[in-house]
Image 1 (spheres, helix red, strand yellow):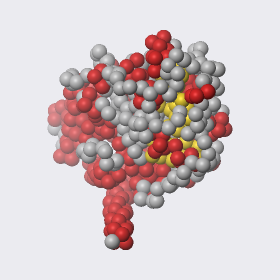
Image 2: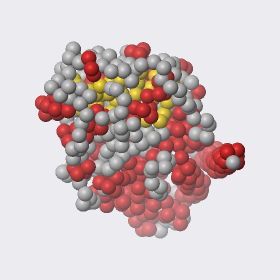
Image 3: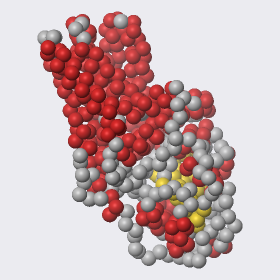
Image 4: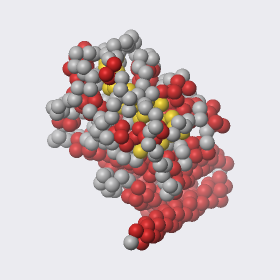
Length: 533
């Protein structure tokens, strides 16, 4: 009976591998057709198209073939854990800087009540007396510092100097860990080569509106099949929150790396230093996705600018010290925001064609769309099918049209970030808002409004000049218009449920793992708090 069950499981896994290989092979076929068009028609039409051809080639190879490779790698055997034979002291860091106390208390309570001996520390970069009082009331450690140099990275490094845990667990203030978080993640450190463990990120506020749901779903592909595949080839990357890092690993790279993408910078440095990583594909600490467009645009602006900075600077410098799988994993992650430039280029090409009276140019663009549209359809279908297969069972399945619309309309942010990175224009640190803004700044939408205006004007110009537009060009133009129009509808969207209800402090009983009267500073760690796991 047992052997029959094992045989069925093997056949099921084999069938999944065959299916995924087949659909990805289909994607490769359409990609070859796309590249062939560039070689036989695009560059042949004008040598000026050599530059966009090289850009398109790099982007499609890294983002499409790179992701498909990670999808297939997900079928490899997962890492196993062994019982811990050494005692590890665990310090839990929750970084805060001006967020709502109710949100912070939710995370602090959850971290404090995790199973397994540990010390919980609130790292307050805002020096808020209310948080100090909260820490005292809950019996957790409280640390602050003078100044805010290096933002989150500086906050973490200051705390490292004042604590002594063997393992550092990091949570952003919007992530509340489950009680068994440590039990499910800490055993990976039984392997002394493991420098950090990253636990899957999920979001629990999808009822806060269309944007919150779309924002949460926008990263489902990365946190599920992509990260699982990266983990199977020893290249899981650090995301930031829900992370566990070995102290000696951090010390080997001189601490947490500063920057707008400090988590990714630290991840690259740790891998370059020879440390291994692990990924826990379980939703053990749900967080808060950006609840509105203001929060989303701010988050994406910061992330994309920071990631592009690393793509230009850190990644080339450590490329030779990374393993092959790590090179691939970071290439996929660091070029993700090139999607904005890719979209902007196609919008620009469409507008040029609409205003052009050159029949040959219109025919060329139509022939391009004949290979481009099928490629994008197949790429989207592969992504949807693989996500349905690999997403965690606790995540409800859905078509990914909402995150597609949201990410598509963020193209001006991504494009601006790339330009700023190329010309070395800095961007100041900006935390992601965790609650809805009172009003939306319409200046975020100026590029989208301008694009829609030009698309409509281009169509009008073609009609007036009686220029012949193929149905395919008309369809593509209409699609670009509709995708932008859907964003404009979001501006006036108002959710009946406020994120504030999600942030109400919990009232369950708190176990006194640390004395109620103490707010621990540099040398005030009580003996009974210094337990071992």
